[in-house]
Image 1: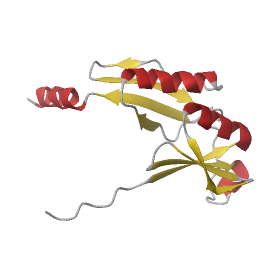
Image 2 (image 1 turned 60 degrees about the vertical axis):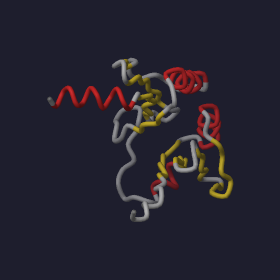
Image 3 (image 1 turned 135 degrees about the horizontal axis):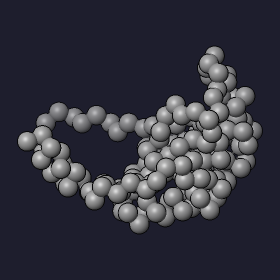
Image 4 (image 1 turned 30 degrees about the vertical axis):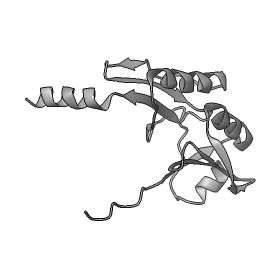
Length: 146
């Protein structure tokens, strides 16, 4: 059997208006600070060993791209998705985000085999939080393909 590729990591870089407030928000949602990658313009937080959010002041973020940084309250460039182990975990994570000052921009989605909610952070970046019964989802896809 060939060697499996090493697990990949993702680092989501987000421009934020208030770094301290955004750090507090993401910690309230469940992310953990990594101070090895932090200064007065940036802070890395981790949801897991492979999922990391790099919060960057808008000025610092602008140093990485010549493009205009949109206001995420008005436009959407990406929808970020975060998996959870259960429906209850989806609700818990979303409720933590709401309690920390986030908003719920979209209605709940319940497809039986998949359940999801979403939250927007303080800067308007949208996170989809979802649980899926993979076996049931595959069965639905097989039925649809038949």
